[in-house]
Length: 422
Ligand code: SF4
Image (cartoon, rainbow, N blue to C red; front, side, top):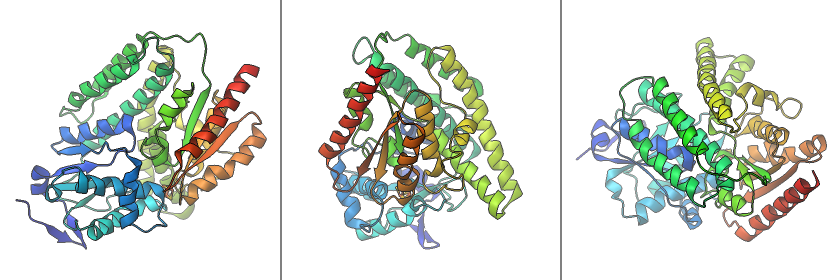
């Protein structure tokens, strides 16, 4: 049995634990995180994605963390503790993994909050692994090798690809359930996709992407009547997580809309770019700056190939990162990069300029940066784009679903009215 090893005031995830423990992964982005878990599994980790989506688990997060902390932290902590306490998991054989952004936002401190919550709830022996690209905390049993990193990159590309294809197909499918069936089929196949030993897998990724796009294209759709497009933006957790946003994507589709959710990869490129910004403005390592630049360039080269494939097959593709970045100009400074920062504003501009002036801006309780870059920008955007139809929806600890729904419905009826006029 793996021994508990304490170092620098924290439990280390050891090599023995890698063999014996299951790593629990919180669900944030359903299209992507399945693939992350498959990528971990292909590198020898027993990883399990937490699929619980009962909003009541937030109470576990509230019980063991400060009530001033933002809602996404409470949900993530709540989901972990709920899993250990109530889902029949052997607490002595699990570790938790959480991302650490390293920026100025509270997301950098979730790990400390989580450890404190585990202690308070009676599980001080559960190790917590930090997933980060900055080398913050090291664990002998968990290493982000170049191959794992590249597999996570592929997982991100596939997640964004599937999200785009599903959103553009499901509202128009001729036979109900076709898109869901295909999505499940592909998710299943992808478990094996990551089982390879090569460092790069460009051809493999290209082949699989082409196959996925063709299969979506082959689904029968009826686009004689186009539905109003509604964009989802906001703080990263509530934007993508059905647990965080009360299944917003599903709600909007039921209300007769086509959902447009910006790619998750943009957030990571924005984070790299924010690192460059800080080095340029305040000084820092030249080498780090070059690495960050190279990372953005590399991801964009891969994404451009996907964009081309999508367009050739008649789907819409996201705009290049450079263009998204330029869209913030005149609205918000690129120096505003805490939380989603300027990216949130730029995404709203992009949606408005590309046929989705109807937007739900998801706002978690306790999130200052996004109240500035999201809700705080709506008036300015409205002035510049009078036809924009943006609604800010608050997600808090005692969120009233009815209240959220009423506001969403009002935005949707405005969207439908405007579409009839145009
Ligand atoms: S962006 Fe907002 S919700 Fe997310 S960690 Fe920061 S403060 Fe919390």
